[in-house]
Length: 267
Image 1 (cartoon, rainbow, N blue to C red):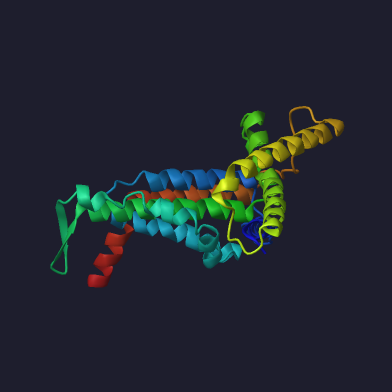
Image 2 (cartoon, rainbow, N blue to C red):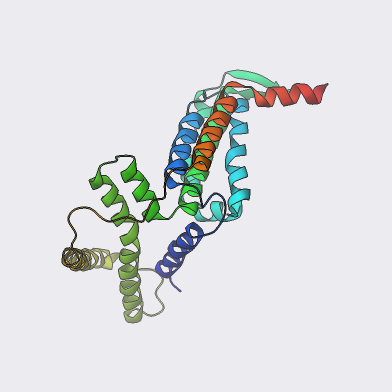
């Protein structure tokens, strides 16, 4: 199994996760989408030195992981390529911000270290929330919810086609990679001298496949908008979930949970 085939398997695994059965899966996709956006905005609103206030924000994704049945290990495995890039955002902060903000057991801790950890946690928390949305909501339902929220149909169509036909592109890459290795047995990867022709062939095959797909869509009555999955009515449970989550985010943002717990423990 080459890398392209492994990527296809992971895409199918995401569809299987989204088709699961749990109280989170059963929620209205618009409620989950709005809650995720609010969570990300609240998480990003913390000051770069407010590490103690940011840490309790992890409670919401951890709780949703438990309720939905999606494993935290699965989340970090799926995001293994993106996570290092996100965590490298504030890697150089300790070199630029050397002002000492606190003493931890006699060890001075600079503002750069705190801001670096804060930026890393913000990125990790936002990725966890985004993964939970995709792992509990099928892409068709998500697009239907976006149209209900009056997102322009062009943007929604591009999102749906991009998500759906990443798999088609990966299949083409898998076929081309297998064909190349049959002609160059024992060689690891694709030689640099073949990169140009390989990408050119991929572009031509993609254009041909895109034309075939578009012709099929037109024959099936496509008129610049898809008929998305049926979106259920926004019920009381969905409204209660949205309201309770936003209230919890407001409390976590305004109340110093970590300091309160610390004062209780110290007593």
